[in-house]
Image 1 (cartoon, rainbow, N blue to C red):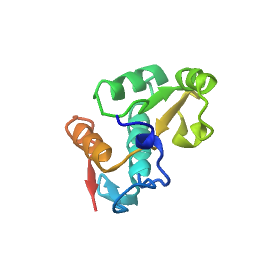
Image 2 (image 1 turned 45 degrees about the horizontal axis):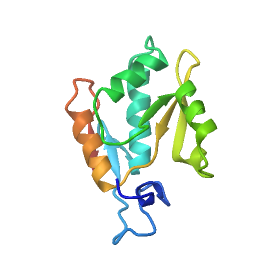
Image 3 (image 1 turned 90 degrees about the horizontal axis):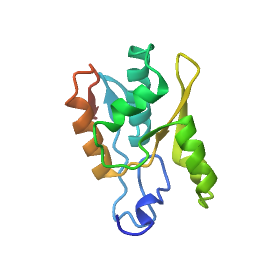
Image 4 (image 1 turned 45 degrees about the vertical axis):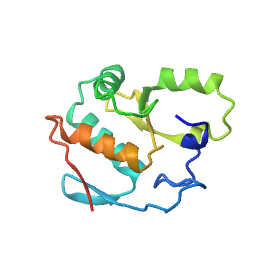
Length: 138
């Protein structure tokens, strides 16, 4: 990755100060909704968690990380997230992900740091799974 500019998204659509053209694409989940890049990622992982209520936070994180999606910290357990929070000097750290409370009360953190390339990679990886989760660009 080139410098920190990769991580300085200004909005939930993945636009940065340096984005040559702003992209406000919207996405649907299983044919429903109209979500931003960060929103569709959150909703897809939330749906996966709802379909698998018996899974622990650790197992859900492992399942998603096994897809090798090209974004660091795509999904983290609360413990992983808190460890990174202690070490960071990033004043915007907490705004770069969204917490999701699972059926069992555990918390996972889902990144909202998606640009056009990252969201395309995410969609391709998720749609290739046999999870009955289908994301489409509107």
